[in-house]
Image (tube, rainbow, N blue to C red; front, side, top):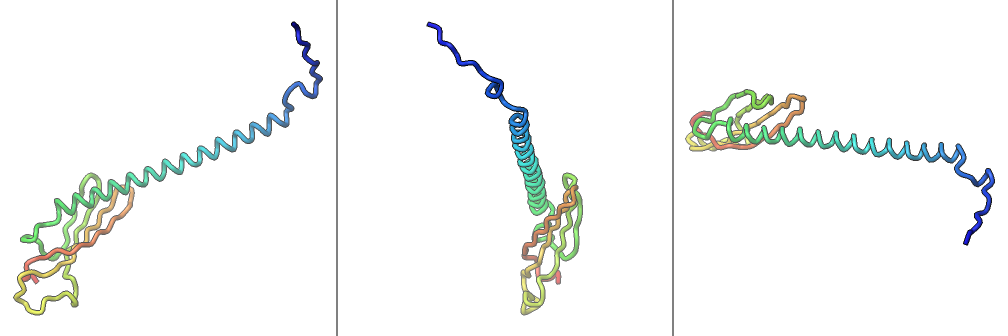
Length: 136
């Protein structure tokens, strides 16, 4: 059995040019929005990777380049590790932390570790280490 399809006149034959242009504009805006989100995400990932690398360098400087207690003294050390510049400043804690007598076996020292990445980011870490009291 044949089924007759109704004739299609010119108005119902398909999309108008305006409808096609609106659909293309919606698709273009969607693609631009997706691209913007992806580029922002990529920048965030890159910044996070740089931060992790900087923190790993700080950790390795703390482990390898800060002198042990027996050799720790006031002053500044500096160097380079994996393209990162680092500087270690060892200074007295201050008046409120001074030992009551000059014959104290151990005194606290402020150890400031500053690491600068090749991109210019800086991480500044401060810690306290005990050092022999005779070095003051």
